Length: 102
Image (cartoon, rainbow, N blue to C red):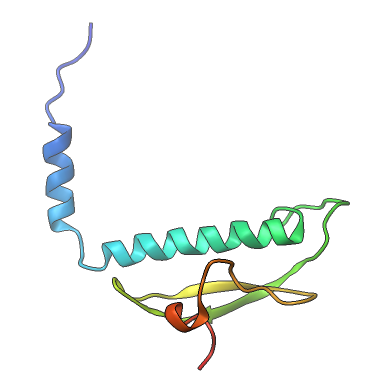
């Protein structure tokens, strides 16, 4: 026997999205982009962040923060730095995205 739900899920979601701050999409996109950049840096290094692996080819060395202007506004993006060599995200044009320092 299940209890009757007193909350309509679609109505609940609609109400919360209507009350959301205007920068909700910018926050979601920033989180998604930073996660994607971190995963790509993990693949370049040969191991996940913070793990020890004998097959690791490189190590991280902090982040470079950039503030690119996008369609959803200006976002704070953390580009991972590597100890050896350089890293720039694949598939990103530095002129369009604005991730290179000006």
